Image (tube, rainbow, N blue to C red):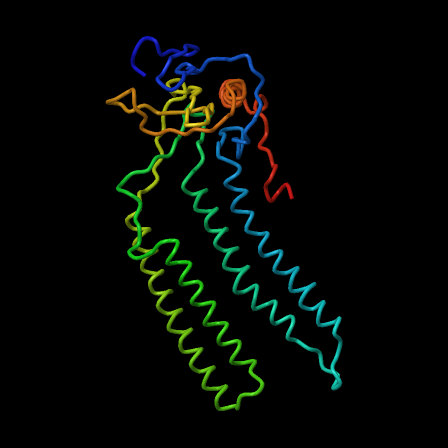
Length: 311
């Protein structure tokens, strides 16, 4: 921010709201340091990492699918088997556990993995901001390169269609195996056809995903960190009013930014968090400032709410 009105503690009016400058030359606000929005992820004597906690919760949320799988197999599958008891020959009926196991493999496992990778993708695409007290520097990530690579012919709809086709093929194979009135030759023919079709589907989908993921990794924008002096970091709280046809909403965001060398009004790299209210933003800012100025003892410890460690 190059003009003379931009200094710590000053307010600036914008077309959508107003800004409260907190730095350069980080200003003391007088608020108590409180990690209101669970922005603090890791803290040591030398550095502090800022990252959204709800992203990590999303990645850990996938564990629910796997725990439900184990519970359903144990209580429903084996529970029904023990409830029915042995047959007249003294053998256990394993159909219920196998049915629940196949259902979990077809439903719980794919959706659990989808949630897991989706959460991890969000974490990787939103890397932490690191403030280093010993070096008196701040590191903020930014994307370099072109646009996000989109694999040819692939979308949420095509992925859902491929999933349904595989499920139907497995259902056909399962029904062929469990047919009681058919002859052995007819049953074996259906099983052979089902396995062949399933093999072709898995081969095609697996080959496509293999090359698509390699191309995506090659052409996607890359994350790089920009390192900037702490005393020159641009920090501000922006209160913006969004007015719609029947709703007026107020958004308050705390932003840390590294200005471009050739255009100080634009950010080379930035990180923001929705704080809900200016007072909460000041308390969140004080966590960072107190750590840099007064040491780790003056900054709250990372919260474990809604994390795997908490549970």
